[in-house]
Length: 309
Image 1: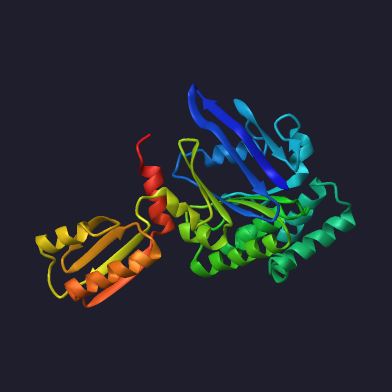
Image 2 (image 1 turned 60 degrees about the vertical axis):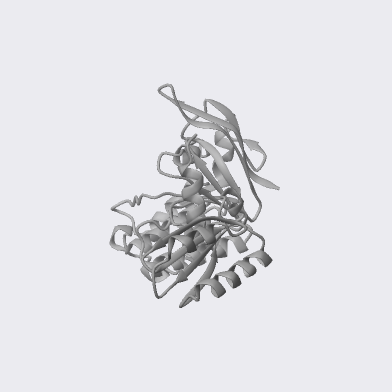
């Protein structure tokens, strides 16, 4: 079942097209990475999904309900974790969550129970009497997660939730996201951390200038680049021009770069041919060290977002 469907989404600001016929869907229990360079249209897309903007064209469906035509009906179907913190100076974090629970129509007793349950889930029950502004960045992000989950919606929109956090706090939020997925939540995650996308996402979308340019699982995205694998060779000398020409002429090799005594060979061929390539390089160049790896998500991202339109 598609919890979220975006169809033909287009948006103009002052005559400039910010979103260009954007189409994608989010399945039940799936974490979908939504990546793109600054200005690609990610935030605009989220604001249309949440009803803050109206699209110039296209539709958004949340749990089968048209969110553009019926924005009020979908408000209880999603939770949002934004980049920015906002805490009432007169509330402690338990009161903060109680307030949000009441906004969703829960009774006083239900709202208090939900606030305490959410604090326990976030590991912050012992801090319930503190104001959010007095907590660490990681703790404040956990409160935003708890807010987003306060009415137990099927869809969560996480807008760069770990930006600015240290490694430990980031990993703790990763575990919270994994826990939410295990509960069947559908999650749309925007992030600038490509390692985060690889670790958490079932599928990844990459957009550029409001247009979808790549889609697939973290491994499948390598189909969008010419170079699938990289071979790094360390020598006890510099590569000669003759050896470089020999390397570039080998089957599947796309290019060859040398920096000092290190040589990097980019190639695209089947796994069995990769083994033959490594064997030939070892026999010919007698390297001190050799390593083979697949193209990273970062390299895919730079390739597809750096192409000329």
